[in-house]
Amino acid sequence: LSRAAYSMASDAKYMRDNVAVVCALRHRRTGAVVVVASCHLYWNPGFEDVKLHQTMYLLHSVVNFTRSLPDSDSRFSPSVILAGDLNSTPDSHVYKLLTTGILEREPVVRCPNEVRLLFDEQLAKVCRWV
Image 1 (spheres, rainbow, N blue to C red):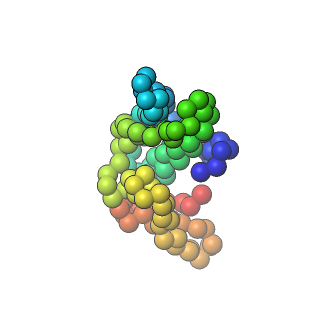
Image 2: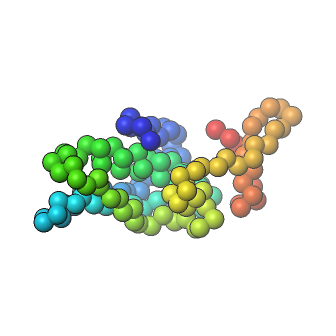
């Protein structure tokens, strides 16, 4: 992940009232730092792309926050704990991204009119690829 801020699409579909909180905790005696992030991702299983955008935005924010911490004690690099209501199952793309660091694309289906469509096998529907 780069230091630059992740730019989420400005489409109204991505503008949700979900929240995340990120903080750094330092052990008084050892100086060890733990960054804790807690979030609540969008609930609707039909909008996994929204959850993926929210997850990427959160990951970029956590990385940038961690990099911005003062290096007063360079013996420890911060550990990160990510918690919250991800509204995702172990077979979801959000879970796969967080556990493997890999984001797999779904198969793209070509239509005769050259409109690109994304087939989501889990939801058994066809969505417009943006």
